Length: 384
Ligand SMILES: [Zn+2]
Image 1: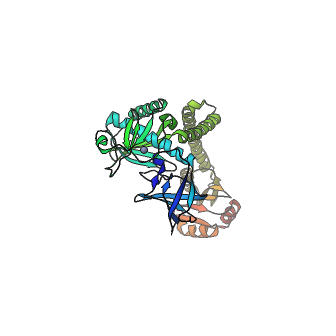
Image 2 (image 1 turned 30 degrees about the vertical axis):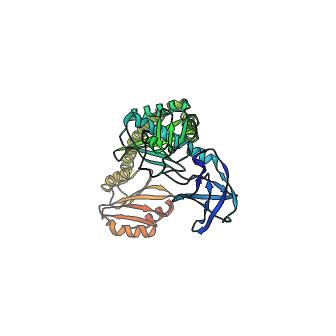
Image 3 (image 1 turned 90 degrees about the vertical axis):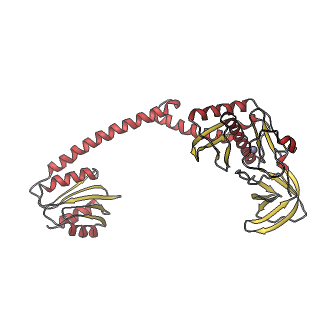
């Protein structure tokens, strides 16, 4: 059995321990110490990071009542080693984990909901409650949680004797065998839990619910606490500042600014569409009826190109070819004719101009991977 030093002191970052065993494994070496401050992956929470005798601890897992440290290098059995916890990672976990207790304690008190899921990963923290919540209820819980932070309440952990435990109205995700560790946040939460927490709620820092959605009849909440919330604020602030500068609007009015921009874009799209239609009509009107074949390079979309082709076919005896694009990206094409059988012609066209596409005898469409000059030259040579 490994003595869990984090059980009694969440703030312990350095410790000495004796190596009880060291076995080679797929990840490197499995090391069991007589005692450790490394919290293993447990209860949905990721494990601690750090080193033992300068060797990086890449994973920490529970195995029965032992804690297994995974290292890249071996440690000598019987040797006394020095463990170091990466406190930045640990404290971030302590902030988020304690924040989760506060949110769950409040939701339990107000709505009787139980916490039925928890995930504290390296990037995200989510928790599942077994009943639904509205946006207003979420906002209220978030407010009360932050109020609990500013009250700087004591967070304590203990193993009460069995007869005392029976009287404690504590929350628990599952039936626990053996001794039960009770974590109490004064007036906010009593919960069975094995993880490290901060000692006073003030250390949690701001608690921000950044997302929630209906999940298995309840709700899944995404949470950010303390430094995670600060980091998120910085990212969001940078985005808001950039949008505010680009649109020349106040930072708290960026959504209005973006809406105006989208409205303006919508209007412009409408205007462009009308002008393009008028341009397509002009192109169609300009087709010289005396010419056998007509080729037009435009900047129009497929619908407008098709409109020109449809109108042009009635005027022109040969092929009406309408293209749109440039020499770098290639050209989209729509060709039409009432007299030339285009199905066969499309094979010749695609093979000569690195093209793809096809259609009916009266209309073909596709793309050409050729330059304008090459297309014009091909067109001059056709004889229908
Ligand atoms: Zn806990």
